[in-house]
Image (cartoon, rainbow, N blue to C red; front, top):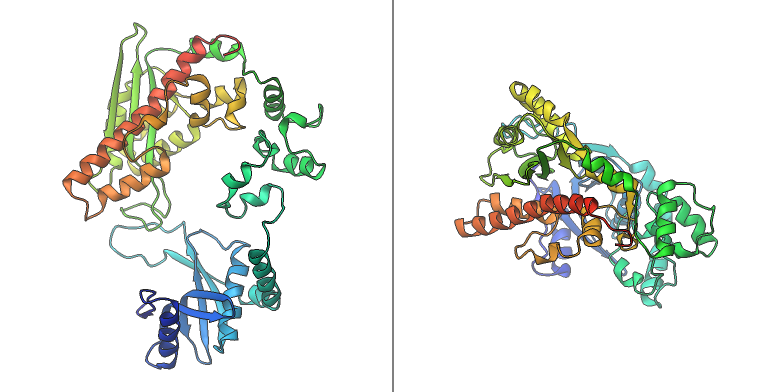
Length: 436
């Protein structure tokens, strides 16, 4: 909707004055980023909409639902606005409707959903003054002496985790896989390091293995992993996807945050040791899915295992492609039937103390294949998040040919390393020596 945007270009004081003028102007019915300050607290409200007796406050979130942590966020804004003498008639949360399906016609009606949170905000607004004073004292005081725990990542990841880890235990109990409850109980008992966990405390086999390997300081490989890999057929296709999930859909028949694949890399190994590498990347800005699907089918042939790292991701994308292109459905779903998950093998049969409770490929690779590292990548892409940013930059209208070529090179190099990493991990398991 049309409205007045309050700029911060001239600083917060000017933004506050501009907000006062906009509120006083009866011709202004909607204000974006209205700015207020009460005491030490400065806030900018996403949307203020004029009502009959006051204003309606709307906080816009990129999430797909109203979450508990959103309520105090809106409550502190409400408190500041009211203390500045502006009457509010109600508070709303606006978030992404992930069931919205874009039809490619430029019509985004239905992209957002709203929830009236007035009652929830009213229930805690009286606490805001006290909480504000508490936070001010905390910021003015010494560094809080609080042990690391689940609060470091929920509801948001703390920016100071790496700082706090410097003085923490070498193997914090927080690394236990799916173990935040166990970690909390251990910390309540004063146990912070995995090596100090009493025998018999843990019940999860995976957590037990993490404890045992961490205490011994030696990696563990179940010989069954090697046996399983040796029984795989030929040729072997090591496959990885890169995807983008826009909050605002770009292409017809896509939803908010739908993971649209734009790139794949595949290392192909034959029984006679002959190998090949094939790849696909579309940075034209057009919907990449059809060409992605057709090229993938052509690459993977009719037989041989398709080896991935975390099958739920690749198989889900292939199923979505099959739904989008019914004429390719049979061939795409036939690929899914051949998928073999290397991650499951690693999780069940291998662990190294340096992995710190994670079986991500970037944790496993330096443990098994230290000579192959993502740090050698010379481009701008070193992980999946950077790949998404690079892709977005490449399809932006202001990206010139030189920029696109540079991004393309970085994306191809990164995705190729992902599949090569799987090859080398599998090879390392084949040739594994005890005590590696």
